[in-house]
Length: 277
Ligand SMILES: Nc1nc2c(ncn2[C@@H]2O[C@H](COP(=O)(O)OP(=O)(O)OP(=O)(O)O)[C@@H](O)[C@H]2O)c(=O)[nH]1
Ligand SMILES: [Mg+2]
Image (tube, rainbow, N blue to C red; front, side):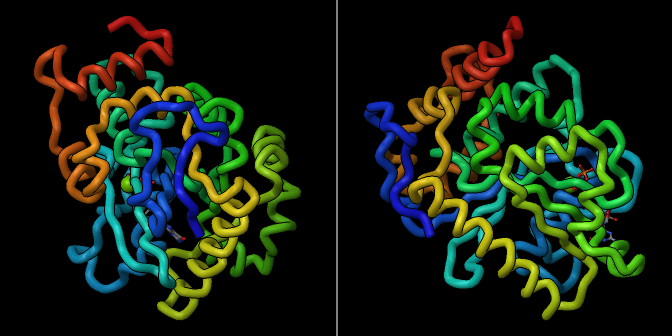
């Protein structure tokens, strides 16, 4: 998987060529609070064991558990998989500095662009939840995002209990979700994050195979939207050489002055949304 990254048609930016990601598979997890993003992130990275050893915090609670974007990496079936987990950012309508910071972090963590945008939805909880997430995704990535999108339904255990296949379940989802399923060419997968290790590995393999054929279809490239390209230009060649270190820097960076690169990222995101700073 993963030829060299870059815009589908090369944008010509001096920072665009990125050899370092030859073996990286970058996936972003987006979706509503409580849909199971963090649990899915741990499953994909094959992080089982005790919860304190898992990179992403998971809890059964009504409030947002994940407060900030985070990122973790592991070698999975021969690929260096990078997962960017997001807070309930994608169901917010808040136009504030915190939202802007997290959206900027999200785009910088996945630099130079995602190979897969995983939209996480929860079986049995599908009411009016997709529009706001799609709205934000389209601001960040535009319509082309569908070409890189996979719908991942957590709660496969509920389907199994009801003896229902994913295909049957998809016939019953609301029209707006059917529309997204169609736009992303029916790339859908069900996950049980509470499954045993063998079952989890099988699911992850199925997902990676799906990502692999999508990446091949996309010419081996990750997705670089216009906004992503603007943010990529803020990344120095030194940062490009060590992506793990750069991601650490992004996680801890706080825009303190309007001359800082993180602030410039914020302004680019705000402009894409048509928000005043
Ligand atoms: N039964 C079942 N529960 C799941 C599954 N996936 C996740 N959960 C549970 O759903 C709850 C929420 O999961 P999280 O991963 O914290 O959800 P999240 O989307 O990261 O939530 P925020 O961080 O608040 O945005 C937890 O109790 C998980 O254990 C699944 O496949 N089956
Ligand atoms: Mg979470």
